[in-house]
Image (tube, rainbow, N blue to C red; front, side, top):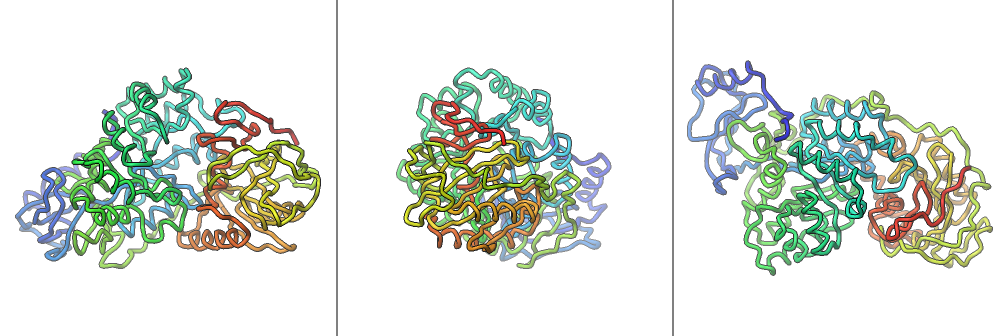
Length: 580
């Protein structure tokens, strides 16, 4: 079994015992609450005693000693465990703290998160210090340990040294290995991946896959390798196929794939009789998708799809905690658990009126309790980008015969370029644009065309990308240079220029890859950017994901990466990047 991260000292446990013995008063009592007992699968009436950050008692008795106890009458209220997001990507323009601060107001108080950003953007020691320091906040943060970067970079072995991967796996905040986007390498004989996977299993931790459209044969092989779960089901039949093989399956509802209603209806048609090995995920949605919350929205959809209420709530908490082997701490309401819970007005209203996490009120009587502590990002080396090189028109030379055609927001196909790349301007009469990926340190570049992004974007620059390198897109080379220069001035971010003016800018203060601002501000800026790009010809679901996935080699068919134009299927570099 993996070591647990949440412990109480002996003296603290003695104090908790004193509360049961009525020698000491509890901090909070939720009186006459109807609560979800996940073990009995029943809604039960009881009094809930809390001392500081731990549930002490759940039952029919009230404490005799109530000196300075906060007593809340929950006679007309429902209490459920805090909601858990089991598959978060916490740096999608926002950051872990801004995300948790916002979504906790609608009941999601636990994030189990991707460490990709930390691998690419932080020094190794500072990354681990960062996840340690997050524990001081009144949210539950857990992490994955990735074994691949889902792109092609130079010197990947320096990032994924064996000792460093093992340090992540040994950390008590790390609950799993994965997500395993590099599974084709594993299937083709990569023994380093297999070794790390075996290390994960030896440490008693879970292994998550990433298997969109996988066949029965592939899923069987991955189960033999030791993979425990997968979140890539695209149909009810996909979910059933995974359950038959012993996988735990996440039902996704994200900005790029809002599939939950479809999946639940198809599962009902498939005759599903148990939800015990299912849970929800929003899979790192872009900011505005979270405007009305996170996992609370998934519960709402499940209830509307006739999922039994106990299952709808268990999929948000108990099922996740049990799978990740942290159910002795969170995910249920019972003596000994961490005091992390939501108070609802009724069973069919998953948006809480009050939220408690680690015994601290985050929301009370429909009002946010103000947080006092902020993150000092500079302590972890996460500061504004210092770009100490210039982009010139000479860097924007386009002579490659092969371009990238957008099938949708994230799938890129190869196409033959027929237009003249030597011109400084391209016509608005077609949807082809210049595309360059340039090293954040200015050492290399790769230039091609992108078809389908937009037909009227003059100059666009973004330091937000899979690798943190710089994406430049546009119809006009001079405006592309202007967008880059403004992006450089603001220390990294996203900039749109046209007619010698800056039309839009979003500073990303954390190494040019994430914002340190509150999520509400980032939401507003993302909406503004979406509208501007749609006005200029963007026709797909999510331009932020389009930017992020331009370099992501876990998706077909070709990608623009630090190593060059990469054929995902053949796993080869078609055209290498060149030195500047």
